[in-house]
Structure formats: structure tokens, C-alpha cells
Length: 166
Image (cartoon, rainbow, N blue to C red; front, side, top):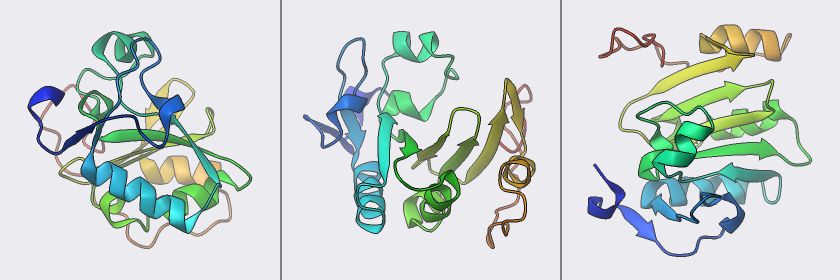
């Protein structure tokens, strides 16, 4: 559904303006994402930066985003730790209810995590250019750290060209 028809989207300058689409300034955000980021910011005040929010299709393609990226719909954010560890950031994100019920991706090589408020749970990792299963990425990135208690099982993928854990 295009952003202009999504009544759950906010269209106004946001608290995280540097993360708007850099090529056109698009600043739309799903109200659930705004609430979840606000909750995370209360839990970790000034401890993370939002590096990417909504993207237009041209910018999404330029950065290698998937065709149906949640960024296109104002439902996703990429976050980088600022003064805390990547482990602390993703652990906190996994306890934020909207992210726990939506998507969480771990990109240790880039030092970021992806969070979104999609309508179903999804977990994945990416090391280098390879998409990996979330637990394998977690174990490689955080050796010796406990795995999350509530990892959701992989759901069948409706698109056979994409792995089930995406």
C-alpha cells in the first residue's frame, strides 16, 4: 500500500530528521514505529542513532534494499549504537513489544540493527554479503552471550526465492 493511502502513517517533520530519505527528504512514519522508537529511546536515552527511516523507491534501490522493504512504507528504521554495545541495543529492541512482534535484523559488519513493525514476526542476519539465519548471526557476533529467550520459529516464506527466516 503506498504511503499516501496508509492512514497509519504520520507525514510531518520527525524527531529523527537526519534519517529522512536523503535524496528527496521523504519523512513518513507509521505511528506504531514512532511509538516503538519513542519507547526504545526512553529505555536507552541518547544511546542510539537512527540512520535510516523512510526511503523512496529510488534510494531504496540505490542502497540495495529489497523490493518490498518495510522502509518504503514508513514501517522500518536502521539503528546504530551510540555509547553502548550493539548487543545492548539489539537486546533492548527485542524487548520492545512492537519490534518483538515485527522484524529485527542484525547487521554486525555495518554495526547496525534493523527494526520494523511489519504485521508478522521476522528475524534475520547478514554477515558480509550473505544473509544468514538469525541465531547463527547472533552466535557469531556475540560469542559467549546468552541467546534471546524468545526467538520465534521461522515462518514459511510466501516467496520461494526468499529464505523462510526473512
